[in-house]
Amino acid sequence: MVGTIALQGQGYAVSRLERAPFLKAKRILYWGDLDAHGFEILAILRRAFPQVESLMMDAQTWARFPNYRGEGVASRNPPEQFLPFLDEQEVSLFTQISDADQRLEQEHIPQDYVNERLAQKMAVMGIQVGTLKGSSLLGEVTF
Image 1: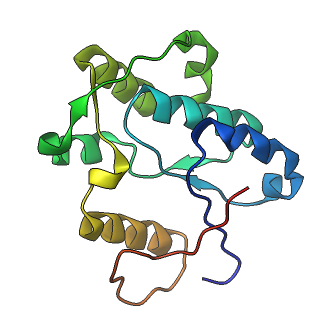
Image 2 (image 1 turned 180 degrees about the horizontal axis):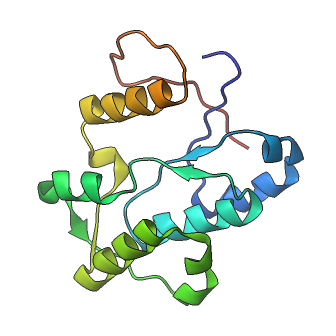
Image 3 (image 1 turned 45 degrees about the horizontal axis):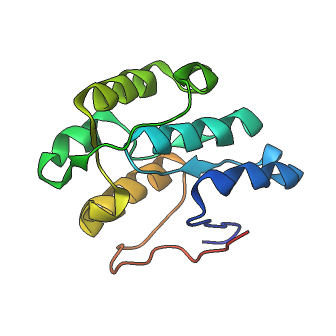
């Protein structure tokens, strides 16, 4: 996809992206694990770039894959640091997941579902895509 950069890995290192001011004028999608850390990383990114949209970090994805959930990993950070940067639905899901002490790691989500949700999002964004097959939709760049 022309004009697209996919960033992978590095977790909390997303804070380094603050050094890339050109991103302030770009549409940014973020997909992380459905756990405390994933929502914290989303908040860190959104603090720097308020336009960040989460993808597959929603109640629909959480409800669809109960068999892929695992034991949660508690955060050492007080939620007050990052909750202001999450929307109402994200806060609700974060609370539900934290209370249940569970997590859903993104690598456990079936690729067909990922492709389907990415295709839906791209359609909303007005991006034409062909049939999404395989395990790699986008290239990756690591900072």
